[in-house]
Image 1 (cartoon, rainbow over the protein chains, first blue to last red):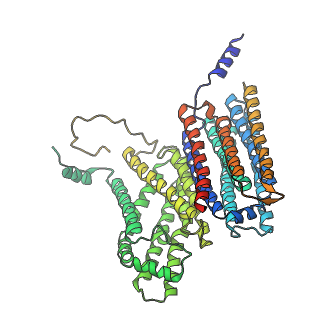
Image 2 (cartoon, one colour):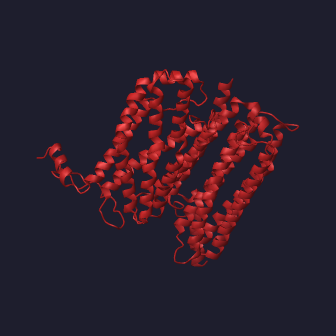
Image 3 (cartoon, rainbow over the protein chains, first blue to last red):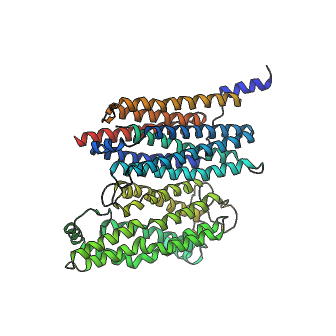
Length: 197
Length: 264
Length: 98
């Protein structure tokens, strides 16, 4: 057994504990999750007061959009997770490729979202149509805003990875943490808007 | 042996940070007064409902007649306290490694924002309460005008928050911790959420709604408490230099009270 | 080392995607020939599956698995808190609505 193999096995068995990215970003993640949980709770309570209205309105949603969007963001999270690993290893070309993939999947989400909104508006469902669509457009818009900020954040990550003069691993991890938040918030929104009855 | 009064006098005359402390105390006093005046004296917060009929609005004014006139009278007197507060915030940006543009834009934005953000409501409400026998439609109009201008003009505050948070995130002098920059993002986003108040007369997005007011308030109060505490820490750490703002030295047990209180 | 990490990430993604697809089945089971019906079972299941996915994302994608105990406990507490708020809103709301 070579020394490299031994130390690799040791590292596998007992990884050193570290906080991914700036601890500051985790404050944001936890706070924002609470905030969204507040919005979700308001939605659920509203839903129960008015079950029939919500069920009827919800029938206008197409589950396929929701599934596609969720998978797109899961792919983007996968890509940025790989990016962080690659960057940690020093494989910056792979990391950059993964970062661009992340952005690409994010754009797929964005395009799909716009198409879905257009479809709903054509059906006559707008922000002011009824309570369900108030929540639908509100939650999806505020989430989309987070996604757009995510593009700026990914811009920072790409900027870091590009030149050997920068490449702060902590900053790349911080950007990844933000992006994963956009992903898991959507996971919750999807379940609540499309599936919950 | 020095008394608190003589220490205060010494600080007043010699402490290099006296203007900063003055601004901080003005900010603290302003927020305390603001809370008491808006929530307990005038009782215009938590907000009334946009869905009310005119008779209900008239009754609302009736129960608050003296509170509104007295409370907002005081608001008009103390509104100038906003100035040292905004100056302190702009000062924090000046201490950062970022361009002066940040501080100046913030100052301009916030100087203007007190008008729709506080004064217009105060004026509309006092006009509404002044003559209870005025045409009821007119009073209802003033009611809508007051609440919409108060809640609906979040744009300036949002942009101001963004200016400050971008400055904090790119600052190399460590004037504020990065988590406060990210919290500013939460605050700015929650202000976006108030925008639908212009459209809805009832429900969670009305100006008194669960989302547009209540949840928004929780975020805003958290943010405000954080920046009051962080500004205090900034003043304590201030070294009037241009580089990284040093952290506070660890607390050391003092065996006797110091006669000179200027080190902070 | 990259090989093992990448393989693990791929498996995680697969699990999350399969859980997402499970929603299709859940969604269809909720309907009576295309007419939407209220259902506590579907609602609770949907919320719980989502929360499990969130925890997986925390642990695997966000690397909380390798984080100090405080962060691991905090994120778990957060998932629990979200469960309480969401399920609580649903059940208390139902009780209040009668």
